[in-house]
Length: 221
Image (cartoon, rainbow, N blue to C red):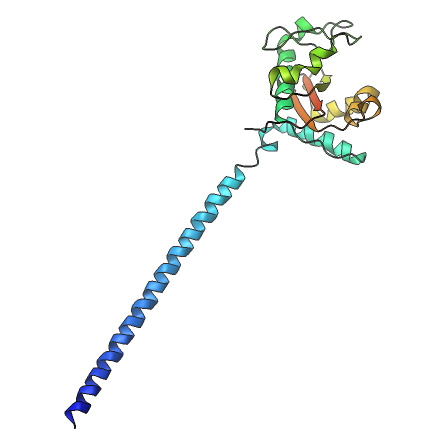
């Protein structure tokens, strides 16, 4: 055999072997990189999911009773051809404050025939008042959102009391049975201007719902 032919054959086999080993190495590297990309994508999806979950606090921030009351009122509005009212953080804070105030100090501020459920005590960071049947202290109610929160518009309240525990359905049924309160909920008569914010509070013996004609500048934290 020609030595030059022998040299070509021996080096051709060596080249084939080197090429094959290189191919195997590339395949292994490709599999490793694909695995890394999959792990990276999974971690990215998890981070996005956790961030998205934390971005929906509004309804979850309510107690079960508050959420039920809020949803019942909106369902009642929808039944009557009206849009749902957006949940307001500021008005909910006012409603809760008034619920707590009346649960703690009602004996001081609610006087039959003189001071009704829209009255406030002097035991908080607000202006106390006796809300009488002639509505001479109406501004005491209207101004509460701006006194206690960043909400700049006036607020309008409907209130419910029971000697036992206040429940959402009972509160709504009571308001539906009262023409004045029903008109507030359904934007009827003098209340025809649409509501753009609603806050709810219910606990103990009381339930308060506040409505506003302007959007709330603040969100639930």
